[in-house]
Amino acid sequence: MSIPEPSFTIGIEEEYLLVDPETRDLASDPRESLLAKCQEILAGQVAPEFLRSQIEVGTRVCATIAEARGELARLRRTVAEVAKSHGYALIAASTHPFARWTRQHHTDKDRYNVLAQDMQVVVRRLLICGMHVHVGIENDDLRIDILNQARYFLPHLLALSTSSPFWQGENTGLKSYRLSVFDELPRTGLPSEFSSFGEYERTIEVLTSVGLIEDATKIWWDLRPHCKFPTIEMRLCDVSTLIDDAICIAALFVCVCRMLYRLRRSNQRWRSYPVLLLNENRWRAQRYGTSEGLVDFGRGALVPVGDLVEELIELVREDAEHCGCLAEVEHARTIMARGTSADRQLARYRAAIDAGAGKEEALRAVVDGLIEETLEGTDAQ
Image (cartoon, rainbow, N blue to C red; front, side):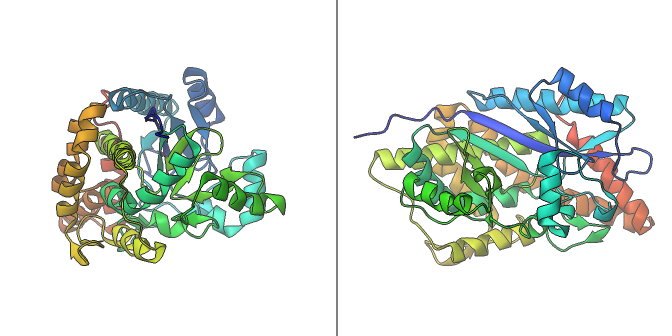
């Protein structure tokens, strides 16, 4: 029996950092009225994060990528305006260029207090931000089938999103150092392949039945079936500093999901590869971003990311046209040409050093660039 086409609705979550515009350091103890005001204006769409210097937003369920873009622009703009009225600035980046995690304070809520007690230093180091994209796929087994196949494409999306090259004032040599921090948590990384939704549920039950976790919200894989909503949630990517880049990545993920459904409808599927091999591409995307190649396992060769992006655009072109987001998908070419946030942060740092700035001054210049770019394209310059 054929499965009806899913809704392919879209929801986007982003996490931001609050900074002091004078020092450019994180606002480790921001006024509580900031979050309260955001929640008053954006009821149900803004929440605290583990650390008080962070804030999280989530779009409503959107029918189109254009709708999701409007939602995300409004959320970024509103939180930035409230932050400014409280004396802070907002940056969309997965790490702060020089802030110290030891100087941060975690949010005093039961969930976060339990996490702090359970995870200890692993979670106290979690001074990182990400972007999550939900795609509506109502059929349980189809959701698992698409999850199994979509794992292949996650490193491509990570490479386009990188925004965390610095950690505590040091150039890490990685374009996404965020993953190195996040991977210290348990139950992270690429998920295993599941034969059915039933097998997935039985796997989670092993953990919940012995009290290791209370529910599947404590599963922090790069890609997971959400335990409360009929969505597949992509969690691997860094938060993109430019909103156009974020929307491009969301559009690509939606179109990959629809392409895989379309293959299934024709009794085809994407070839499955061992997690060991997929993790090699995950690492290369984390280390190099778009500057070095990923492995094309079908060819058995390293291929430039730009070539793979072109192939991906053509692979999902039919789906992008169907979903009305071809321009957003093709924006991946702009990311390749202009570089990711990580590339621009590193370039700004080097330019400041070359101009005679000291290390601390150069890092502050990186923060200035992030503040500016976070609102670019949201009509709140």
